Image (cartoon, rainbow, N blue to C red):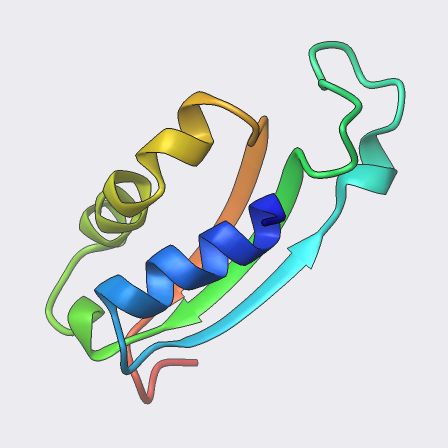
Length: 89
């Protein structure tokens, strides 16, 4: 299973109501120092979920980071994250 698929699966399982958009930006970082050059190391994630209602931006990021702890400790070198509650711009 691809890293992108694992990210999507884990988030969907933890937050079934979530609208998830993932962009693999690894190709933009080819040759970047520290990048594992696997083709699945840099991602941009936009997630909208009821789980984020009443939570600060930092709390939202912590929730996602906990869900994706294994990926962030391994194959994912960088994750750009936008976590919103429904109705937020």
